[in-house]
Length: 129
Ligand SMILES: Nc1nc2c([nH]c(=O)n2[C@H]2C[C@H](O)[C@@H](COP(=O)(O)OP(=O)(O)OP(=O)(O)O)O2)c(=O)[nH]1
Image (cartoon, rainbow, N blue to C red; front, top):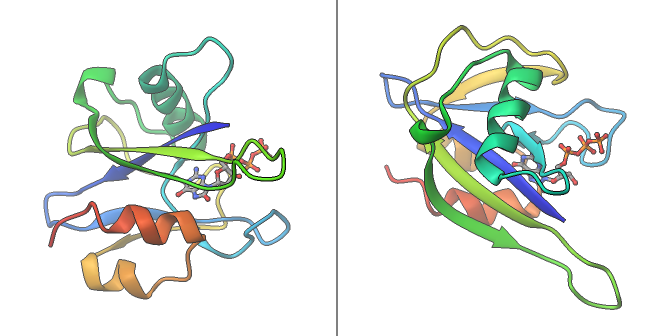
């Protein structure tokens, strides 16, 4: 499964994270907004779609910059997950949680402290300062 996620960085340097609803897998953990790439869908288009659906922001696909990826699984016939992380500093609108329990803007050290899924710990290393 391929998942796309966005590290949206505000002018003050902080990044947007969202808290997964408690009832879901990884409930209560903080993650980058994003989601699954649908069959035949371009990853950037998938991320633009997910950001609109999840946090009501409009982005241009060309404003997404690839920063790194993390992977797991692939053992015991589990297909595993690959998460492609993009960053962006330009978008239209104000972030409003449509699905998340909560949204927050965090600096690098605060991000390190948030409870996160294992793959997000790996993704965080790609974000500078
Ligand atoms: N969006 C996002 N997903 C992440 C991150 N880290 C991480 O392990 N994941 C996992 C959780 C899910 O298994 C998958 C993302 O798919 P999703 O967000 O569409 O999954 P979901 O279960 O919420 O959606 P659904 O199947 O109920 O529609 O990737 C992250 O930082 N952002």
